[in-house]
Image 1 (cartoon, rainbow, N blue to C red):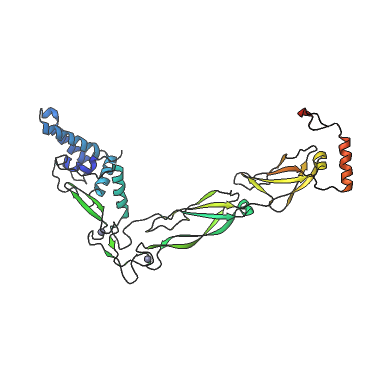
Image 2: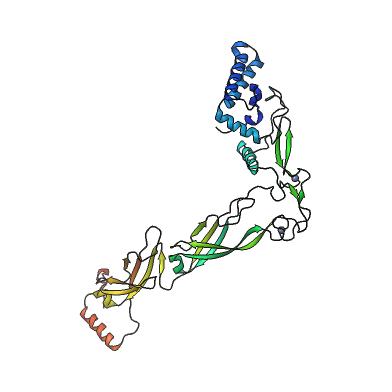
Length: 383
Ligand SMILES: [Zn+2]
Ligand SMILES: [Zn+2]
């Protein structure tokens, strides 16, 4: 179960009159004794006893269950920030003026904050360590690729700028020769205890913005931030078959993490150049191949270039119309699952100029085909 709001407010161990190191057996026997003592059957009409009985039951509901008790202990350990549950006498929980204040947000936020701080571990260290681990930046880069490289895949170097520890101050944020000093207001903890009577909570120190240290003389290069933008080279291996506009995530190749945090990711958007002969349709390559009218009419074997610089022989069946696409299996883009195909679109070429012999031959063809108009079906009288 999720930690409850009451867990911050109530000291269930006190309610049961046991120490927080008591065994489950001790907790159980304390509960038995108290529940008998305050049971409504034994205290007829006694409102105080009834309240007490309810408290004891609620306390046992949590610390009597080993799993819930574990969570409750965690909340207790992190909650008061060392302030303990001090100031609350037995029975004080729920009393007027007790309890602690929620500064907005739900319990998840509060817990997140607590656990976040708890993870920092070791308390406030020296300057520069007050902010805890930070994941590195996610970076974006564009990579311009040749058509061939995109199809085959390639290893290349991307140049980009990203955050890195400032080279002038080595990340301290202070002008060289000076050192940041511990924040006097919070003593370097980065947090201030906000005592709200019974319970205390911690807030980021306003004097040092939670850093735990103060820089009097900021580094001129990074203006005190300790980080600067620095050019970087990232070697990347792009898989075969990258498409134009595709965004590739390279895990852990982004900006470096700070204070032991993990690096960010690098997102590379591929910009693939055009090819003079080939086009791309997914994992298929496309090419348009001109054929003569006789080749289209009679059929022919034509040699078609492939992207790897070779050729493949494509059989044009007799009576192939212009614009028909023939598929050559497995000669497209070598994709991860299955290599694409080469799509050969046949285009019947019409000569711009004819030699005298050609003209004669074409005229003979026209005469032979007289009366066989391809436009018959349009129902239009010609001549
Ligand atoms: Zn600097
Ligand atoms: Zn401070």
